[in-house]
Image (cartoon, rainbow, N blue to C red; front, side, top):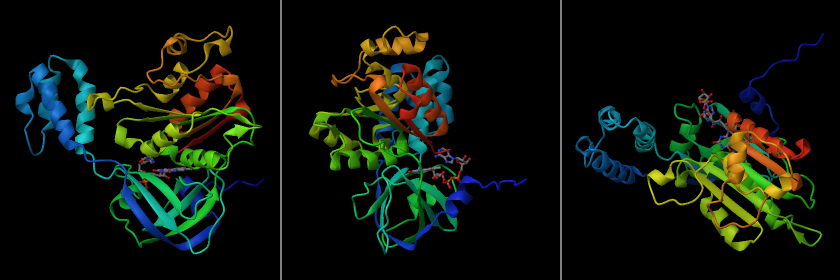
Length: 343
Ligand SMILES: Cc1cc2nc3c(=O)[nH]c(=O)nc-3n(C[C@H](O)[C@H](O)[C@H](O)COP(=O)(O)OP(=O)(O)OC[C@H]3O[C@@H](n4cnc5c(N)ncnc54)[C@H](O)[C@@H]3O)c2cc1C
């Protein structure tokens, strides 16, 4: 009997084919902002309303234990908002970076694939965010607090630095062209392979099949607006193409700004845009039925027919799993659902 060797994810990506021993970083840019000032102002306002503003200092560090105690004593429902403010105020910056690099020789990959990067003796997988039509390759990386590699990529990497690149690998790939519409669903940096695929779709005219436009949807979720990678690029694409529908979903942003877009989880937001006529007499549980009945917050008037849809989903495993379950229930055929989990 042959016992298959078990390899961890990191070991696996360390043994992909070598692309470059010495790829050169040509750009590093923070994608998120420092928003401590905004958090403090909103916290003070909240404090004025609920009588705890005297424990919020006008400048300097905030004692969050004291704020928590004072704010939630009589109003328990404030706990999640104060917790979100604390996390946002205390978090290291940058928490999201884009990294562009070049290799000595060009390499081929398909939109949606990932590479492995070895830097400072650690190897991790990162999806390619740029289209295969571009000369330089772009990654989009989120800081995992206390992670071994991502904080170093966020804090230490600069133009001219070098790292080892292996790959490409991955099966999150575009289907052959067809008349089906496409829905891309991602949270945070899960959008990296989607950016590559969406750019590629529009650059190569795959958003059209036999003279007919296909609707291309992107539901992108994050907590805060500046945690949406490529937000402006997607908004521009949305303005440029009638058949591209960008639906950002922000769970916490309304606490910090006048955000008036979607705030649900992306799988729930998607349900609001489903054409109920396409579901015929299908029966759903209460939650799905309620979401289907909700009116979209945006002005997008296109609607989704799940039977005529191909779905691409990427993000943390738990989210990808619930997305997969939700779209299957709606009637998207299994063979048209393509998912990748980041762990
Ligand atoms: C196919 C694939 C593609 C990927 N593409 C990207 C990408 O485009 N951009 C990107 O930022 N990351 C991506 N990742 C995740 C990336 O490979 C690393 O796991 C991540 O950067 C954390 O590495 P680390 O060394 O900082 O943390 P580690 O030291 O490996 O982990 C520290 C702790 O954080 C937990 N953890 C690991 N990853 C995550 C995470 N993503 N979210 C929350 N907790 C986590 C671990 O379970 C562990 O407990 C991808 C992963 C896979 C498998």
